Length: 271
Length: 369
Image 1 (cartoon, each protein chain N blue to C red):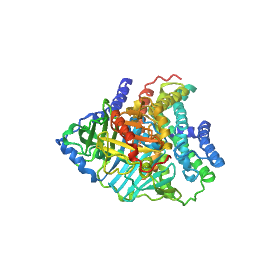
Image 2: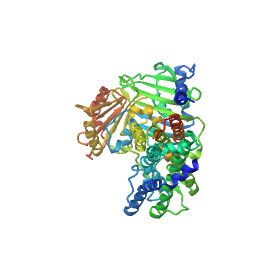
Image 3: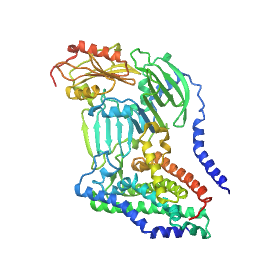
Image 4: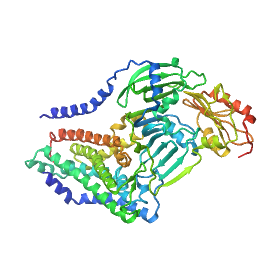
């Protein structure tokens, strides 16, 4: 079942169009930076973007910081929102469930497929950014050290290790979005409604984060720790928010997956 | 399993997930039998303690700021997140955590280096006697140490224990004895074993909520590794040395004034012997900074545009929470005295009147700037 869903996801043209669109923005930014040589002022713009003109090896991180707040969650919401609702809308859900597979197994297979999409999207964006960053941006030699946020030197191995951790964290950060969208996908038969519902939750979360009156809610909002991957580049690493971010995503996944299971396994499927 | 049971399982799991941490947090910590004076003594004695941790401060004071006072405005008017490694007063590091970078202070016996990631720049300065407040001053142990200076043991009382950074911390309330003070009280919670101040709340007269809170979110009393507090210049980064740290240091070094020995009934601090005067002690502090025209006029414009500002004969006066600000005019010199501190408006006006009336006495060299 999982193999079937993965195969479907990889062969689906929409998967690659979505990843291509995700990839286009950081690539455009790299080209513009290379042509104009104008980086954002220090302290403005996405994390690490002001540093990439000197050190192109940091561009995968800048690319993740560019897509993580809006484009990546939108893509995940569309893909995960389509998982069950898409089958229902196209009238194939009934036939899928006719096969000797349990609904829980189907739900798990859909979740694995969505997680694999997130993994694929993050890796493609990071790999493309590494190539464009190395070719177009800061021409520091590959053996040269990179400066951490705290001003200490990071060797190439340390930079690679921390970049790997940051990519894993970015993938983790999207799991909560996937779980919310998957749940909504079991509630509605419209993939669009599931995706828009998920985006509404994320927009509300982002808005509440700017409000001092909502300070007590901040640690529980799904977008609160998304950009904490920057903490992996402090020296010593600041694990506090990274750990909380991972824990929060785990809680969102547990709650919304349980809700999706409770809803989907008892749902009347007519389409 | 029936639909009802399935949903019951989900609701139960959700309730446990949300409820357990809330219940753990709501459980009252065990109080300590330590008295107020003894706790204050322990806090005072902890000045040589080593510690490290993660600190959050929240200031609610919307001060009128210009380019030269931006850092102070942020410090007292916003939420600041810091990491600290404190070996002793001659070896410490404080990082101000920003969303996309950080601004770090590395201190050793010879001075302080400020590292700004976003500007890719290090700046080394000496540590002047007089300077504007900086992040390290708002760490709970440092803030508490300053606020309890010369506090009478009669002016303190015990308050309820509170869990701070996982420690059941007994609290002490300090009320200023000076009538000039604009502060109603300061609440300090400390580790009962080490005496390390873990949380400080400053409450202004007439207010119920804290104007400034500084607290540890995580803390360790182990001595941090020496390597962590040493700054090593990153390759390729700009590095500068500066003779003057900030506007208060510059005024103190170069302004041609000597303020009087006392202002509005507050005695001048022995550490302030040049152009900038620091008066009072502990919770009640007044600072008089002579500003030249270029620094004073933008501040005056900001001050005049701030809601609640009052124009009096001595200048423009404003109270923001416990902080009072008054900017005078110095005829013939341009600029004016910036009087600020945790004192009442009437104290500021009295101080300005005295500075104005005896101005000629403080002028060492005369010449408009």
